[in-house]
Amino acid sequence: MTQGYLAVTILFGSIFLFVLAYNFPRIRGILTAIGFYMVITGIFASYSNWLPQTRGEVPPPAAKMEAGAVDAMPTDKLAEMGEAIIFGKVGGFAERGIGKGQCPLCHTFKKGDIGDRAPNLIGISKRAMERIKDPKYLKPDTVQVESFKGSGRATTAEEYIAESHVCPACYVVEGFGIKGTNDKDSPMPPIHKAPIALTIDEQIAVDTWLWYREGETPPSAKEMRAVYEKFIPEADRPKAEPAGATAAAAPAGPPIALASDKVEQIFAKMGCIACHQIPGIAASKFGMIGPLLLEGHNAPKRIASAEYQAQVKAGKAHAKTPKDYIMESIMNPNAFIVPAFTPKTNPTVSPMIQDFATKFTYGALENVADYLLAQNCDTAKKDGLNGPGQEPFSAVCK
Image (cartoon, rainbow, N blue to C red; front, side, top):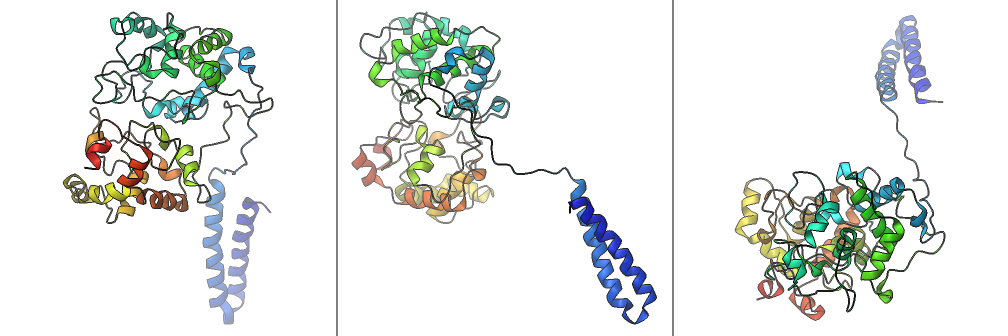
C-alpha cells in the first residue's frame, strides 16, 4: 500500500467511526476519540505524502577507467574529471566543495575572491606566462630552484602550472610564502606526493579544467603528460592505477569519518594532513597552514586565553574542557580562530573546512579528540615536527 492510499484509508476510516458513534450513543465517546485521532493521523499522512518524496539510493558504482585513458577523453569530460578532483564532484565549483586535490583549502577560484593562503587561480592559464618572465622567476633565490637536478625550469604556461604543482617552492608568489622565509619557501606540498598524491592522469585533468573553464583551449593530455614527466623523475611518478581501477571522475559521495575508522584514516579522509602537522601520523609532517596539533598542551591554554574567553562572553564559543574545545573547533571552526591564524580578509571566518559537522559521526569525533589530547610537546619533538611559521614548535613549547 502506498503512502497516498494509506492516508485516504485512514481518513475514510475516521469518517466511518464518526457514523458509528452517531448510531451507538453508549460508546459514542470512545468511537469519537478514536475517530478524532485517526483524522489527525490522516491529515499528517496526507501532508507528508504531498511533500516532494525522496529516496535514499546506494550511490552508483564509480566509473572504471584504465590508466592512461585520459589521453583519449574528450576535453569537456576531462575537464569534468578535473572539477571533481578539485571540488569533490562535477558541479562542485559552484558549491565550493573540496575534493581529493584539496585545492580550495587554500586557493580561491572566483573573480573578486581574495585568499590569505594562496593565489586566486582565476586567469592562471594566461597569468602563467607572466610568472615565468618575472625577474624573481628568472633568477630564483628560493629553497629549491629545480623540481629535481637537471629538470630545468618552466618555459611555457603549461610547464609553469605543472611545475607549481610538483615543485611549489621553485617559485613563490609574493606574499604567499611560509611566514619568516621571505617568500623563499612555499607552504604547499607537492601534490604528486603524500598527503595528496595525485597521479599524473589526475593532474592532467585538473590542469584541463583550469584552462577549459576560462574558455581557453588546453594543451592535449599527451602534451601535459610530457610536461609532468619533465618535472617528476620516473622514480617519483605516482603509480598509475591498474586496468579496471576506479576513476576519480566519479566519486561515490562525500567522505564520512566513522567511529570504526582508524585516526590515521580520518585525518587523511578529512584532509587534515594537508594543513596540520600531527604527531604520530606519518603523512602529517608537512602541513604549514594550520596550527601544530598538540592539544594535550595547547587546548587548556587556548580555553584559558583572553581571546577565547572573549568569544565565550560573546556567545560564540562554549567549551569548558580541552576535549570540548577540540570537538568544538572541528564542528564549529568559527567559534574561535587561533590568533596567529586569523585571516586578514575575513577575520571572523576560519579558513578551515566549514562542513565537518555533516562529515563526522560522533564516535569518529570522540576518537580524534582523544587522540589529539594525547599529543604534546614530547610527542612532537620525537617526530621532529617544527610547526608552521605563524606558530612554530619553538614558540609553542617554550
